[in-house]
Amino acid sequence: MDRVGEVSVAYRPPEFDAEFRERLYDLLKWRRDVRRFKRAPLPPGTIERLLGIACLSPSVGLSEPWRFVIVEDAARRAAIRQCFEACNKEALQMQTPDRAALYARLKLAGLDDAPCQIAVFSDRSTAQGAGLGRLTMPQTLDYSVVNAVHTLWLAARAEGIGLGWVSILYPARITEILDVPQDWVFIGHLCVGYPVQADDTPALEREGWEHRHASSGVVLYR
Amino acid sequence: MDRVGEVSVAYRPPEFDAEFRERLYDLLKWRRDVRRFKRAPLPPGTIERLLGIACLSPSVGLSEPWRFVIVEDAARRAAIRQCFEACNKEALQMQTPDRAALYARLKLAGLDDAPCQIAVFSDRSTAQGAGLGRLTMPQTLDYSVVNAVHTLWLAARAEGIGLGWVSILYPARITEILDVPQDWVFIGHLCVGYPVQADDTPALEREGWEHRHASSGVVLYR
Image 1 (spheres, each protein chain N blue to C red):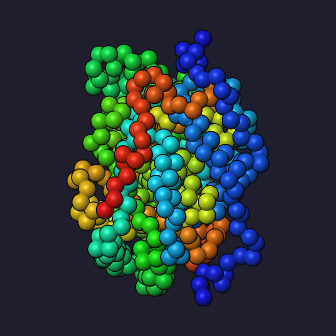
Image 2 (tube, chains in turn orange, brown):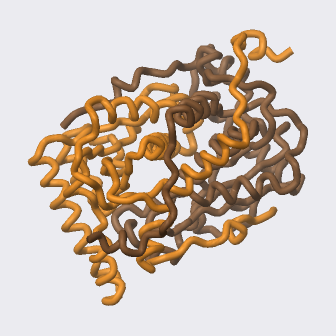
Image 3 (cartoon, rainbow over the protein chains, first blue to last red):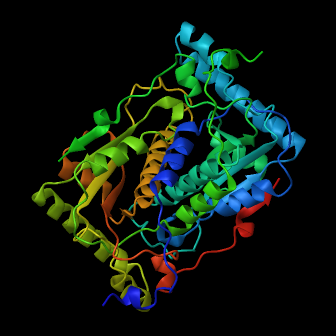
């Protein structure tokens, strides 16, 4: 007899039917990395509620290392924007001229318009979970935070709210701007708000930057 | 006029209703890191189909750096099991005696029973995406792969299939065992199959190892 089974609760687990799965695939297909936001604010409490859902995500050793910093202060927002501009300028120099022009057009950040901004960190020093599962791979703490961001992304999209993940930033500078502990690892800066439009094709594909490839090409057998 | 809007497709985006969202929250609540699997195999083609869904995940610069290695060879599976045992032994020494006993009981790997095993890697050398978005944060490639694992996890659970993420391994050894390129970053080893039981509480919480904390404690304002 399974020991865990003995203490399991009496209520029945949910069964997900084909109709739900179809909607789930729609959600995955229509989840976009949103760059163009309406300026309308989210209803009060929305982001905290969505972050509560994000905390249902898996984490290594149940360490829950995610730390969400909601950035509201105008000066800090301006500093982050400045950090993006400097980093973006450097990134442009790495591209060929024609791609650089395209890159500039892509409007990579929703930093100006998104009503909500969240910097996300991984608390590498957390004692929660007592180190379980992360002895040889401490980066699994960061991966746990990524899971939470992805959950947030899907939960937001399911209520018509878009999310854009900005990674063209200098992590150390963001830590400084937001005055968070030095040993928190910066994972990403999120812009959240109502998207200008919904789409099932990535913006980078629409713009001719890159296209998606068949999954068969990335599956190997050993 | 939004340039992107001009080229947008004519069909209407899906609207997700409250009922769908409730089922989505159920999915998030009942997604578990499964350790106890039935030995029954998955129907042929199932895992390839699920990996196809995982490839709908967001990736930095549309780089799609995920590489999935389905491990079928008995000798390679045995080598991975051995790697886990060695790593687990070392991890046990890091715990206090009472926690070590609990740790040993947790049966951390489904390596013996899960019919399907997938080692997941991040191709740090991929040219796809032309470096977009990852100049200062190349680890966003790895984060993209984590997104794909999370999508796989949810898609699997939505059809009653469980997934367990094993991270108590030496990454370099896994790369060697599976004979994949040296510059692929090992992200995790996944056990996939039908779970012995469904649950809405993490095994580590059921076992008294750790409990989940309120999300309010991890949200800061700046």
